[in-house]
Image (tube, rainbow over all chains, first blue to last red; front, top):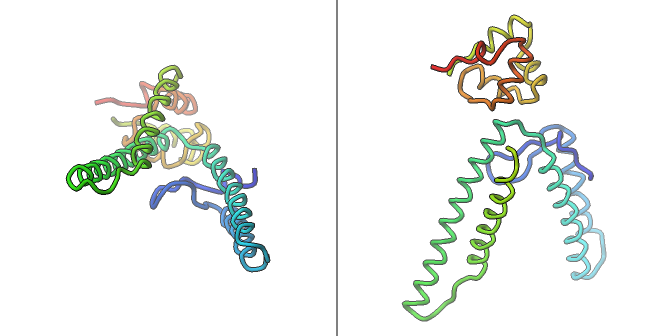
Length: 143
Length: 63
């Protein structure tokens, strides 16, 4: 992989992911973003081709960032803080998803118009499955 | 919870950063430990006690 975890720190405020910690981290961000911008300006390709190249390139960046996030060293206090903040974020998202589904189903029932967004339902189901799988593995693991 | 980490650390002439590196945590964790604002795992408590050549009982005072 390209980026090194020691160049980054966990993003605590304003979202998820990592944020540069050292100058190498900032250089990494510039080097990874620059080709994307240059490709848009200088590569004379069809829109479909540009979309394909951009998707592949962003996929590589995404995989590299995932690798950095997974290998980023955290001590036990950071693990606890992250676990609690992620749990709170999950609950906030679950509440919004439920309110969304409830609103859509109410509108559908009252007016007979509109529909329930399947992505909202899928998010809840996948979240539930993810929790169940995590519990199965964590119950067996020595923590 | 009170701790005597600062006292023992001074005896061994170790900085917070030195101790953090020896037990594999961030310096902030040592700061919070010394202030008694973080309950460490048994492993971390044991590691800190080992580095400071003392026992967990000596290091952590539960009130």
